[in-house]
Amino acid sequence: MPVSKKEMSACPIDAMLSVIDGRWKGTILWRLSDGPLRTSELRRSIPGITERMLIRHLQDLVRDGILIRHQEDAVPPCVRYSISKYGWTLVPVLETICTWGRTHLQRLNRGR
Image 1 (tube, helix red, strand yellow):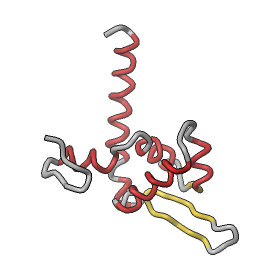
Image 2: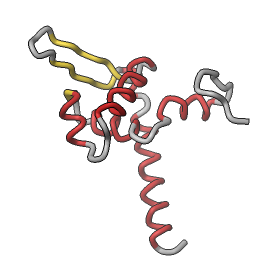
Image 3: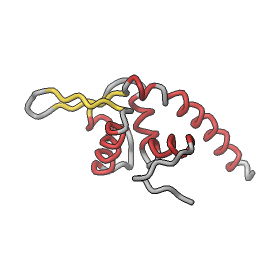
Image 4: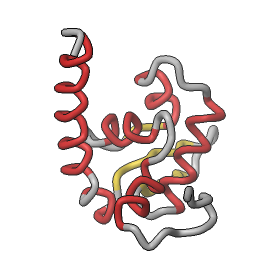
């Protein structure tokens, strides 16, 4: 039975997926693995993402402790996002998922 986003499953796989679930979260983390970026830089680097969806995913990832939001006192405000120490523990998992995804895409392109 599916678990709502407000309810945490005891299954470790469900717990991990609840953090990276979302169309763009993996891509956001992948982009930030090269270093901190401003919100506008992230948006330009991810074609197709809306500003609203980007902000929503960034807020989720900050809330889950995966990203750190750095705001400089400037006009206009300068906000940068970076991967937290805890978030870096997720990067090898994303690398493995990416490798599997490439293999799966090749399989699909070959007609299975």
